[in-house]
Length: 229
Image (cartoon, rainbow, N blue to C red; front, side):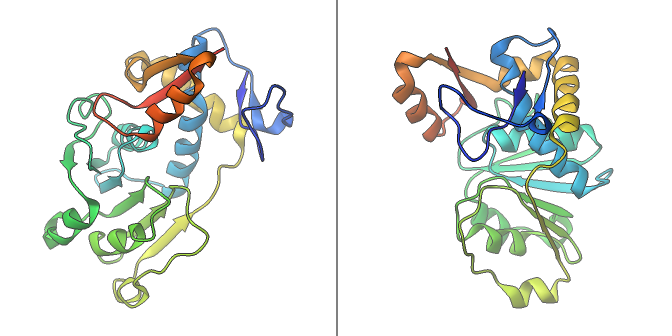
């Protein structure tokens, strides 16, 4: 069984309604099944973004969520640029990152030529008051921004520039959980190499603090951190 718990998790018993759960087949072991839930959120977002065939898409933040966005959108025909302060060239080919950029999103956006501007920019960072400004700067006129990273309560953005470029801003939480969880399981079962590369660190519950500290410190060769009961 895999799903999502709201508003609380990390409890001994977590109640959840049936419409937020999916019964897994034996195709994935317990560790790699932990990838199903985050991938389901990405698949739901990708559905909102729509057809990306032959489009340039930039993913800002290549942590566990960002690399899944890259894999899904590349699989759907997009040319994917991935931007992160951590060097992700080691996993770029596997996750469909056509152009990995190591550096700050603001500097990357400021140095873009008009011909290289992406059609879609995805914020997979969140918790940053500056990230929407970077997205607005980077995206081409008439392009689209998808704010996926968990946001702060209030943001200030360059509304005049957003207006002049005729941009679209999308966001939203995952809906129709059973359908997207099932699709995520199928995606991962067909691409076992992704699951193997995605979970990079495992810890027992006796090392809970180490697990959280590892997850909080982005580093090369580190993506998803899993706990083993």
